[in-house]
Amino acid sequence: MWSVVLVVAAFAAGFWLAANGRAGRPAAVRAKRVKQKKQVLGLFASSDRIANNDVEKLLGVSDATATRILDEMEADGLVEAKGQTSSTYYVKS
Image (tube, rainbow, N blue to C red; front, side, top):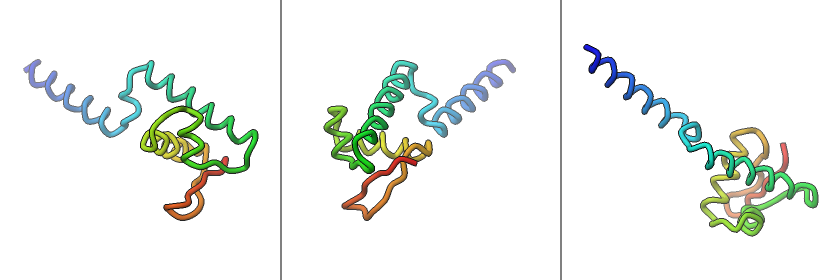
């Protein structure tokens, strides 16, 4: 009986972590991402809007990573995407 309960609990925990994505990251990775987001927000001190390329240069990350960071920031309500797909820029929310 306990083995069934354990299997169900493990499945539920795995499903929850998969559904919540970022919550399943190790603490060191979450801390690094928080630091990166603070650095990106610092870009707004010198400009009203930023682009993916600005984040790439600032953090020394790939295009895909910069996109993920900006997408997370948008989901968190920190920035807002503007413009078309090929000329998207971000403003502080």
